[in-house]
Length: 115
Length: 114
Image (cartoon, rainbow over all chains, first blue to last red; front, side, top):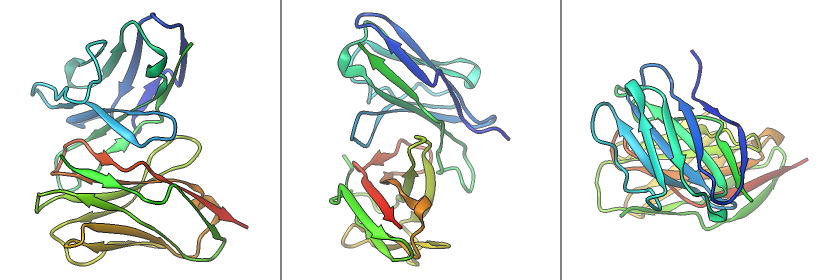
């Protein structure tokens, strides 16, 4: 089946504008993760959804960041009043419970540039 | 909190040679998972190899193998018969238990030279 998809692939915005990044996980995967990769850095965890449980928001860097997951499938990461330091690649991943449930499958990412 | 350290920001290797990428981690947990991911210029994160901490045998996937030293909290990746397509960023990652967020190292940029 299809892998994890993300849109848009690239997003350029002006400082102070809001942006929405979309993630379509693999069908049937119960867990969904958002990570941020800044230039030259590893991936930094942002937020994590597992089934119907309350999301783990412990990685969100500020209250300008929020995410939701509708119907246990598609997720949207919203960044309000973007700042230049928000420029990064935002990666989404999904996984499922089961014998191989600990493998996370990643999307191609959204490169966000804040001017 | 768990941490993952990759002490080699960049490495290079001649085609067909063998290279080892280092990774150490810090945790107080006894059961966990370790991963190596490859990220080529396309940005797509690709799982290379995984190791369950309760397994003593080192994982192997074709030309890729690991040296897992649990007591030393070390998890190195060996790439044999390096190919030009192996050129990429390599990230070591730790997972505390199934279906929880990964903790990544800062990565090692590997260049395979013809």
